[in-house]
Length: 462
Ligand SMILES: *Cc1c(COP(=O)(O)O)cnc(C)c1O
Image 1 (tube, protein in one colour):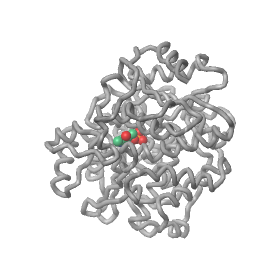
Image 2 (cartoon, rainbow, N blue to C red):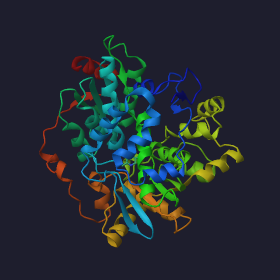
Image 3 (cartoon, helix red, strand yellow):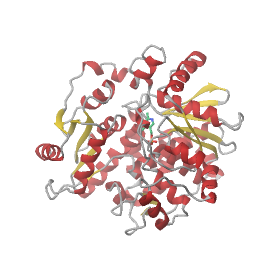
Image 4 (cartoon, rainbow, N blue to C red):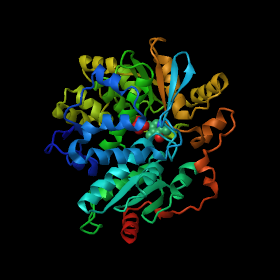
């Protein structure tokens, strides 16, 4: 399988090349040239596979000959061995043919573990084969940082530096990053906001001359193709549990950077019978305005109880737009270049395509807290605020009670205590493996919001 840039530049790339690159050199994102098609018979054969075995089947065609199948099996098995639920991604009932797909049983309690546990090990394999060392650099507003650190800390071939905005992440999120042990793991608290962190990371990638000649920077942010790939698996897993291939299933996906829902879109194109795909947003609703009203325009960023979805523009949406424009890189590039200067819309015909593919809703903080309280009362289940946005969005746009509606439960509620408290409920306990999180030693350096300070810190510590 080969990968091409959404902006049309460069030659098709291999899986290994795409793994080590973030953005394509022309500023586009990598997408596969074609998708494997899984027919009903194949789906039926997959019905009773364990999560790990299913993941190997789904992922293998995308990886191709980048690594031997036995190695892929080992990496995937090891990646999910530390999850604290035997099913890895259990499906639980909410009543009325509604379900949760619980994606928070990994080491850092959010769905990002599904991708980053594997990504860390894939990188390690490739770097080991090439006898190469790299520097992973990323900025986080919360969940990605801890998942990336956990996924990469065992690698002998990487040094990983994660920037977070000083005093602007929750205490649980900070401790999950700063208590990760390993002498190749570094946390930098930047005296600034998340945008400042991102600006520094971008500038460091643009000019890597501060690194020794045999090192390069690698990105593990949400545009990394391998992360999307690993997220396709749990759509298959949940749908097969709930009646596929005979019956269709709908999914509601709490959405920020459009990575998770894009994986669902790919699963549908691969042949999984998905009825509705619901883009669930908080008050940062650019995607909802586009899908419901053909209005693609950025507004002001709102700070909400679901911070991992506080995003003005969803970077992975470009991958979907590329398909919507008939894979015409020129049209896509023109659209992306006009964006930011003016509000955009697409043709009536294109918009109908969008509406046929996605439903959407936007849920504010008050409603989010109300849903957390209601679901607790009705079912005993405690939702995290991102998941609550998904559950409410599903309720708003659901077309048929006969089709199972699965909301992706993207994080454990203990990670987002503010919303739970605001909903009038007691804070849940952290799972056993994090029970002593507040007693563990923290390790991080506070630095000014300044590129030179960050790059000299990196130079001194690799
Ligand atoms: C990252 C994240 C999201 C958003 O996922 P995207 O792939 O960026 O759309 C939603 N919920 C939680 C808890 C997250 O950590």
